[in-house]
Image (cartoon, rainbow, N blue to C red; front, side, top):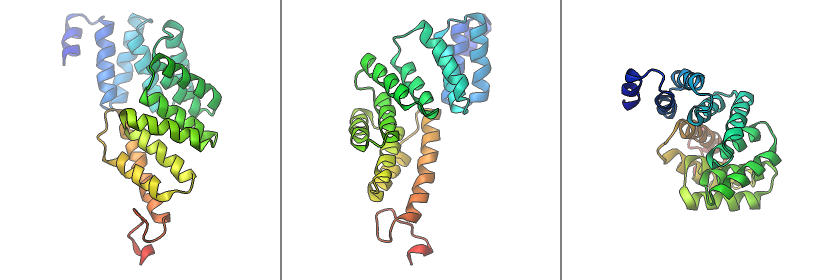
Length: 217
């Protein structure tokens, strides 16, 4: 790996250290990635790649409060990163601050119009408010822009909330079929598959995706 070679030449190369952490994070090797981000930040506290990577790792492992602090630190240095605003929006949405999350996603979309990730996040926020029309508008746009496991899974949540089990199941199946591109996708896909199994048991017999076990005999 090129990052290993760079670090062999200069162990204090914070960019290579942050790059190695990012590569490990994307492979789902979070426990190995975090020390690299920490080391990079010891060398250069302003290393934005390490700041972002550490925040992402904290969020994935459920350390939401610490992730928000890390993202706030990033945004204090760089207020022009749509991806960071999007991640911050997801974090505060987990904490239940829906209005703040929408503001973050709006900011992300102002910086990067049409961002599928920001549209997906905002769609989930509208879902929290039970504004299903706005949720579907954002999620349909997200899927048209760049269909992802997260966007299909989120739209399935809206359809399920509306009582449209067949449409929800169809989207969950699509989410399960896509190839994960990151650890976030892998987590979202595992959740989608579990939800599809649970929903299949609740759908009436004869419905698309309904359970084929003994409950439908």
